[in-house]
Length: 571
Ligand code: ATP
Ligand code: MG
Image (cartoon, protein in one colour):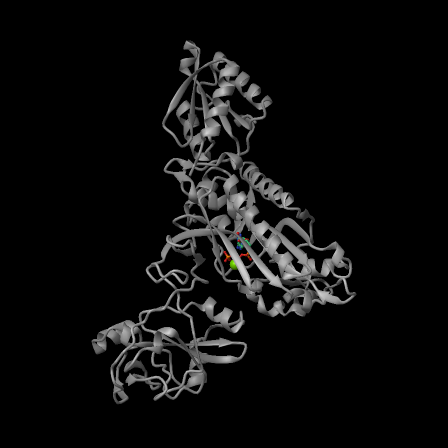
């Protein structure tokens, strides 16, 4: 490709709505353009990267025997109603009616669709296991579409689904997927973590996320250097070690606490540590309103509540719901005299004589004690694990890093096949529901995630395998006939050798060309400029300051390009 023909409109200014570096760079360099929040066009450079990522993902899926197909994006509501997800999936689902008032969704994921597709046609245990996948557009009306391609409302995903007779067979495919995902990360030269993850709205009982390290990432990963344990903060567990108290129980007392609502304010007002306060929160789920208790200095992890109660609809109660259920506003809630069920975190178990809300506006209780003053229905781990907490496996202190989730794999079991009545016939002639797995990879998100991991003050730095071009031949002065001829010859030659080459033949200054080459992050630059009169061109990698002067000899340039690109490592 010649740059003079390339459609890659660049911007000098940082786009005003870019909220993260990758979005700024991808927009400035003419890779993508926003249509509306969370919806983007891919311009030729962006599409080249997208296609290369797609190809890597496709090859690794094919390598483990998965077969590609393509399913409709428009899906009838009925199949989602059958599994209960028409309601459970929540407002992220894009729903609409056709002219006959029949309801549809633009698929946020395809478990219902694929299970319905194979139902009745994948019949015998002899045909199993089978893994099918597609690379297709997904729609999710995210609450906060942001960070460009990282959280879109329309985005491209590879989604695979596997069908098995039993857990053992599922486990094999799951392990193969795990290895394939690791290979995809390695082929893109990425620093990543494969971590234990929460299963969320997809369901099932086992899941891993593949997370690319990036300091602006939305995922928090807790990991242990000692034993290798790693999990997302939604899922992470820990080894509790709360000191037991030997205080004797004091008398419960209602004290006036005017205008004091938060743990922070309460600790100041009473002059006590936050660890002597129990924080009460009210949630709503499928079974109505319930109360949770946790030590004042700790945070609740909603994902753990959802997982524990197997209820994805659980959310914090709105202020008006709290008042109507308990007759007290948020800020003065407590377990003493509560009319709703109380679930408490393990951190509360060993506490004595603590402070809780008074269940009366402007009041708190001091010296509250479990069992004597209120009953706990169940003790559960609902704590958000943080760096410094002890590893659940070996007890060493956990560390935390930020990253971007690019893929997630799940063991689903029979959740979908049972509800959708998708059966096969086993060796004894019995009908059994398929045991299933599902495996997503965010193809378009990967573009931005890679830029987040690899960029500098001058622009993007692409891993070779997914760079829009591998080599740019920069002709410093396009009106110099010699430079143009040599540049063009090198370009044609390297292209014939199978490299992906861009020739910068534009009538702009050399400095401008260098800046653009750095901005779009092409791994190797071959500069045809002033040194040509000494029979030399310059060769330089995007991520290094070293410049090599190489003779204008096709074979020499070819060998050097091969060597430099082989040595080009980003990690
Ligand atoms: P997140 O927690 O980031 O919302 P998710 O757990 O909902 O992701 P999955 O349902 O597992 O995501 O989807 C598989 C993959 O699709 C994710 O790993 C991610 O790479 C990608 N993905 C999910 N939501 C989006 C989105 N809104 N924009 C771009 N890619 C997305
Ligand atoms: Mg999501």
